[in-house]
Image 1 (spheres, rainbow, N blue to C red):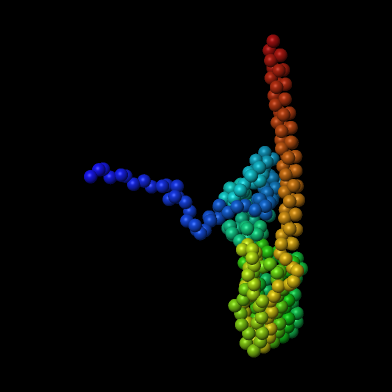
Image 2: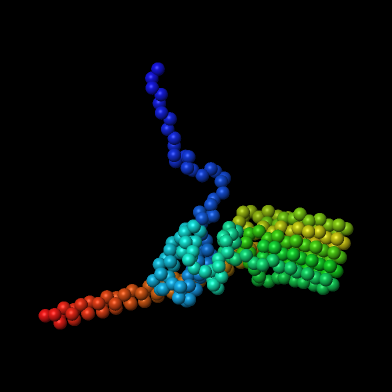
Length: 269
């Protein structure tokens, strides 16, 4: 009986992340909005004197070369967030959508009407109460800083009407008690689309939520991308100008040192 053949272990396969395992947040690909957010913090730091032009230029280069969120975070680790506030802990959905979380919003109509529509930043939680009144929530032109939005409604002898873009996910877990709770549920084809959950109940009242024909969240994203492109162009121009100033200053300093050396050398003869 011959000697046993030693077993080998394929280390490459052992270290491979299992299929379907969640990606670490630091490994998530950075978006243009993520880079713009970090660039804005650096710009404020430069204006406040926390960074000199050379440091700012180096960090801006790093920002626009970064591919993942993990590469962006160290750039501003030693700086406060925009406005001098400490940076909140990372939030995957907010980061992916490129916005800061908004505070909860309450819409209350008691023998009256309350409306929220137009261009506005949608918070993660909205509370709507209609008692012998009406509440209208229109999300068709809204900006979504995060993917998940929960709307909790209470309709007592009143009405709550919700309008959403056609290409978002709309879900419901509410009920009507001698009233109507009608949600036109829909699953978006895009897995990254906003997801809106409508909960609550209607007692002798009505709650209705449905998409608005022709309203697409992609239109707003196109506008946001265009504004991001303009901001990136402005930041790059500022970066190039500071680079030119920095090189010119160093050139003059080197020239001055050479002139001093020549004067000392000529004076020693």
